[in-house]
Length: 263
Image (tube, rainbow, N blue to C red; front, top):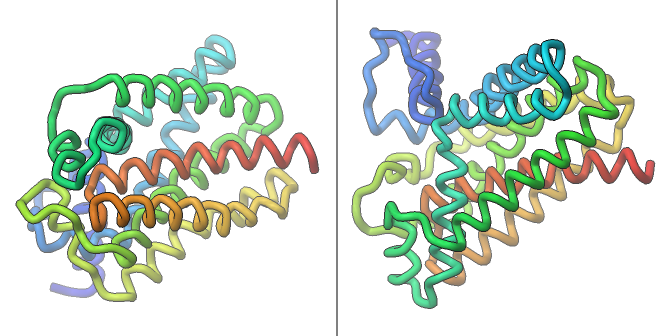
């Protein structure tokens, strides 16, 4: 397999695993590809953010800003099949209702939605809506798209670091187990490039160079969450990675709103 074809295979592997978008028929799904495909997880964020941004602008033209934001959120959830939201919900249930490692892991694997998951999703989606409303009032059309692309890309970079920081917590097979195999360091470098690159046009479009402060802030949040997961379950699960993505995406929007208010 040529290098270009191999990279295309890894990209489409990431696309079909992390979204509901189909891959070409010539791409054969192999679990062992998932670890290497992690390099393209932030690039998947480019796609999700761009489509969500386009949905926002189109529905804003047809209706009003509030409906546009809701449609943008719905599109992003449909694109990913609520992949990360599901992880966040399971993490809320597991760590909210469990007091031992085994109990936390057992609750997280349960397909039923508990009180902690319901409340967590309501609060985080409500906060996301409010933050995007504030961003929409300040940013241009290109600024909105750049913001969503950057937020989705950078927030998907953070879980990649956790794969290198912690061991996988479950002993049994799971959907995320192939991702847990630590890939070569070059995979992390590629993920960093895809995760950070969208910040440069965003800083120009928003005339906000301090936006780069989001990198160490999200890094700190990720480190704190990783330490918390490590303390309670001795590592991470796929649900933990989804929770980190959701929290970091919200933190990205939050920082942007704070910058507009005080800078």
